[in-house]
Length: 183
Ligand SMILES: [Ca+2]
Ligand SMILES: [Ca+2]
Image 1 (cartoon, helix red, strand yellow):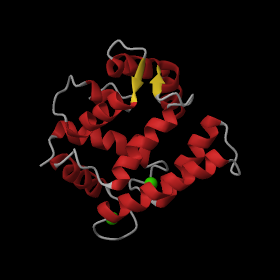
Image 2 (cartoon, rainbow, N blue to C red):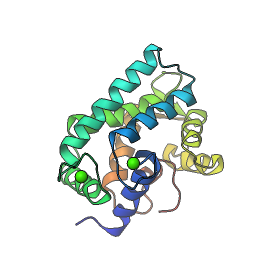
Image 3 (cartoon, protein in one colour):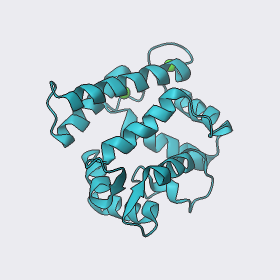
């Protein structure tokens, strides 16, 4: 069983980052909207290589996720299916399946705008505010996840990411990796 605390984290992620059109389920359309949203934040046009790459990666994530999560095969991932998906991940978090590893890497790459292998405060705040989060909150969230460092390395990020999905500790820095403060 997934604890209420972890359920809260998972449903936050579902609502803010995945169900982009607010329909209550995750579908391919949500991924298409997210690609547009990221492209807008980054200033990419549909013909750009970066746009095409992001599109390819996001659609691969959707396909992998759908395969694992859409248990009743209706083309949508419901919130219950979503929680089950991460329940399975938490049983063996050191072995993420392909799309989970992709997803982790994609989120890191999207935030690392300067492509120097680390996410600094400006990068973190800019991506989260493009998803509608208040800038002040994103700044506080960065303080928590960076733990006094100027930036988050890829190694730090993977650890924080895993913490978000598996940790029952309300003080775990990884709880804040998607910018929310209110768990
Ligand atoms: Ca949706
Ligand atoms: Ca379904």
